[in-house]
Length: 124
Ligand code: FES
Image 1 (cartoon, rainbow, N blue to C red):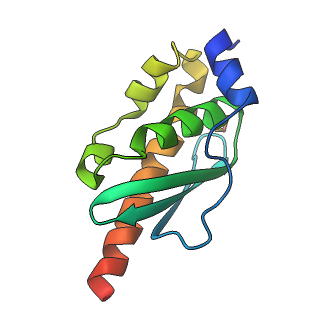
Image 2: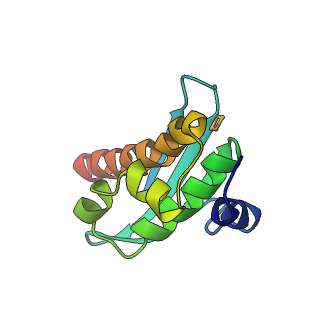
């Protein structure tokens, strides 16, 4: 069902785990399958300096979270917000149509983590 690139990333994903002192954490549930994605961001100034993920999701969720976290590390917040699940799917060389919804999890969880970061900043 998956291409070789997706399988390779799934078998050896980057950035899995958590950041205990994260500056922003976002958790998103997938309405269609019930799986969950949690993204942790470390932010310095306006730049994402580290990102990690934990998921109860399928191979597509793991592979797309790996790529999405790789893509946002080193980016400014505004640049990270422009990264779409379609960019991640394209990088992976495509996903089966019934797995596209899995790729939305990482994008939405990154947005939720940035929202969390911003609301923490506003409280200071
Ligand atoms: Fe739930 Fe892929 S089937 S994240």
